[in-house]
Length: 204
Image (cartoon, rainbow, N blue to C red):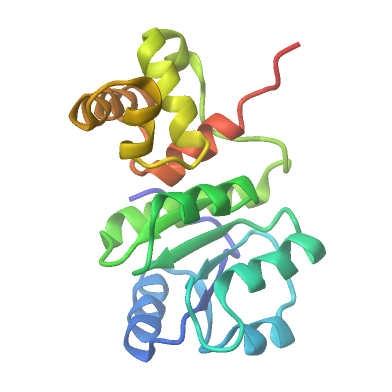
């Protein structure tokens, strides 16, 4: 497990009492300061950012959903890392969240060790310059032309079937190339892959 970051704060926003309490216990057990909220409205009323901090945000909640909360955060505090934790994920939603600045997009049921590590990564990001990202992009030079085409489709938010039709190949072939891309990038999820690609320096 990565070393704890001094004075780190985790903000949990989830309307599921069981999930919220579980996450509270987990992050407190690894020495973090935790603030938990059942609604997006309650979180935003109480929100006073003090870096390093990270927000674990449920996607679908009554009244004010996770994307709406994220929109407010992007306006007020665009450099605070947000990790969506949701049981209702699909590729277009994940890609959209990453394009609008989410740090990661993790599906329930999640691996708790992975979630802790991603939260630690987000906290480190919070304590760095906003433009800094810990990911390198040398792996992109190892992609085949076909893998680059498929990567472009993934980043555009297209599903495997749509990519296969667009490129005139089978869906199974897309899945094989996609697995190779994930392995080369070191990404653990499509959302993380998209974040790495979108964070790369712009070509000059």
